[in-house]
Amino acid sequence: MPITTLILFFTALLAKTSYAFADIPSGNTPTLLPDSKTHRRAVLRAPLRPPPSVAHLTTLRAGSSALPPPPPPPATRRLVRFYFPCLALWISGPLLSLVDTSFVGLCAAEGGESATQLAALGPATTFIDGSLYLFAFLNVATTNLYASALAESRNGRGGGGHGDGGVGDGDRPGEGVVRTAARTSLYCGIGLMALLLAVARPLIALYIGPEAASTPDLLDQAHAYVQIRALSMPTSLLGGVLQAALLGAQDSVTPLVSILYSTIINVAGDYLLVNRYRMGLRGAAIATLAAQWCGTLAMVGPARRKLLSTGNSLGLLPRGLARGRRPEGDIGARTFLKFAAPVLTLILGKISAFGFMTNAAAGLPGQPATLAAHQIALSLFFFASPFLEVISQLAQSFLPAYDVLPKDKRGKPLGDPAEWRNSSNALVARLERYGLFLGALLASVVASVVAYAPGIVTKDPGVQAAVRPLAGTLAAGAFLTAPVAVSEGTLIARKELSYLASVYFVSTALLPPILRRIRSGGGAVRQVWICFALFQLFRSGCFLGRIWVTRNNEKEEEVGR
Image (cartoon, rainbow, N blue to C red):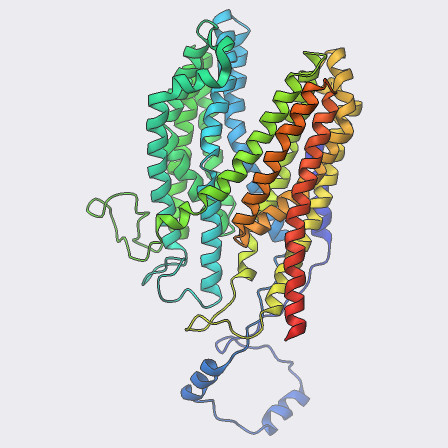
């Protein structure tokens, strides 16, 4: 039902009449003129004028201080074509884990050993997914820097020199970003793989706690799964940055094809290794490992053709071993790593918020129904959030085209950038409207499930009674995620990472004391979700306030001029 509703929503948007933008014909483009007698007479009577000299044109171009018009805003159809493949990419990671869980779960009904494997699969997949999530700053940096490099090239700043775009002689715009991202992700993946192979067991034991670790074979099974999946860390991080670069190039279809390959291989591998050959959790891990390897390999060729010039390599191998030309102009790894601290603060803020909420819910009276109700609400929120996070990706991919202004050869802006800023702000406002509408739709869906149909997610009457009071606060938290996601993507696109990190740091520091007080006072689980809704309200207010203040300051500057 939610998917059908979303399709209807975007179909209605597509039916809306779009704006028409006329291109200025170039000197080599024939201009269509009306064919009439009056027109022919006017043409014959008009005096012939000699074409302007090259020197005159050069003088005009060199002396002109006027900005060219900004790019036309992306049509709704173009945004939709980007949105749905990108949404599939967001849910692909959990989908691979869900496939493993399903096949292992089918075997779990046939014996106690398989049931132990199923119990071990939960923390093992969470541990692997969390390890990859900590390196999400590589993807954020790649999308941001590559989209900015494209914008610089289109706006006349990337033609020569080796700026942030890493454009060398004969390179496509952004090649330096792609090479540095690929190399950095591969090295980080190798380091992460080595760390997991060396110390995964004590880390898993610490993660699941002493009681679960003492369960026979549970720790051993989880450790075996993590060790096998650890071998995919280099290719997983490499595939992530290639996917991010393609998204920065506003191509969400090529990564989707790669994900389709990996999903097919994962399903086939789980069927053979888990169902047919009874390899259990190890079979599921091998199937997912093969799927991630093949998915990344399937993306390397198309990404190289789309992002690099012919003959150029991704720069993964040393110069002596690399095939093809590896041009100069790569940006430094420091440019990527400067994203690490701010984005890691964002990531840890999000992860810790849900961890603090679960810890508080576990200490409230009425267990186990209270914790079960909290888990249902959390799962529904995780179902809704990818639909909104993709709009954040839209902002990161499309806004740099308006925020990177054309400059002359001396690096000075050409004329008044007011029109470009207005176009950027108009796109932000448009994405905010889409986000609010979609957030309201998703909030109504998850709240309706909790309030009127909790039997969809649980058959326990006690849990159903405990989860119903969470409908309103869950809806508020889901709805407020929309302005958070869009404004967060806007600020990332505009490289206001320090401000984002400071807001996450403050909000994450304020959350635990409030939740601890709720837990010690024996409050209701609804209070935990009220706290989360206020947490989202605080962040959305800070992010939207920053955008609004910046916009007002720009207007005051225009008035002052």
